[in-house]
Image (cartoon, rainbow, N blue to C red; front, side, top):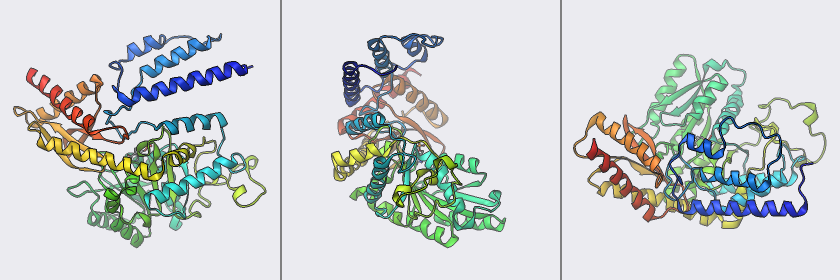
Length: 472
Ligand SMILES: *Cc1c(COP(=O)(O)O)cnc(C)c1O
């Protein structure tokens, strides 16, 4: 019997609630790592690697203590964590995720999870309104942009009658800076991926796209899908969406906007203009776990045409067929995506929108963009730092440039600097390569980060960089 007595159940929930609150508090300040991460130390703290399968129960307090140790060894998305594209979770969303686990709705269909399905529809509409994609949409939540892109590429294959075509003759066009999830989608589906050159600001060059499509067609291939990235992962560049939408329409290709990282910025005055044409896309992907401050995993694939998924995902087994009920009540997500069992990912976004309001979220996103601009200003002012790309959205790419180093020595120097910084744990940046130059990349997607954090991080880079450039 796995149940606990009422008393122990409440005790467990209040203890884990308290631990969760402490974890959120630890993330409010930093450091990124409580101690330098090192695999042997972690294993020893958690029990040796060859610790046997527990056959007998441990006391719950001991289990919770191990859990606490595991949390303490984690990486925290503290206000000076600027690596990858990753936000700390807002506390309401963490609570929401806990509740979603307790209710454990399996959101396969309306019949299996009636309220969670209604919430998913509402949340997709809210999200779509938030970014200016309109409120008349379909779609679903998935684990991340990677699955969203595989899913949308499959949907695009079936649009415009390409479903029966020879896949080796179908091409998916993305920019050179697009995310590698499109390489995976192309591999999985057996289509060709074409990477189109970018302009000086690392945005897809529309003329290069037109030329690439013409060359491809001359070889007997057909463009079935064109993707605009609205916020590239390396530098935050936004492809010219409106122009690419025109080309996609002329070519009768599906037009997707990869907003996994950047789409939430379309909710801000500051960045909205760069997203002009977004409403002309057939679909858009948004990772709520990136810039809407909810815990992983939570990505939305929003589709303009509710019929786009018809026939794409084959026939479900008899046992899951919904045989009766009103149209909404016979709705099944399995007809619209690759997953069958799914947790209620929308729940944490729904509670986040309700608890904070869309305007506060947009303000927070706006502040992140402003902080990236501040970081770029600090880099420009510093004699020993060099900006590698104009900041775009909330990304700032730069490198340390001591006077006595040049060329490949600078690349090596910045590589060691990055490793040192990442192990140091007071702040965290990741790497980027801009035009063959190795650099440090900060992506600011944290509602807690302040100007102080940005200043301290820039100073830390200078300090660490100068320490060992003097030594070498
Ligand atoms: C992160 C990212 C993806 C992939 O999303 P996951 O949720 O990590 O699978 C795709 N595109 C862009 C632009 C991204 O930043």
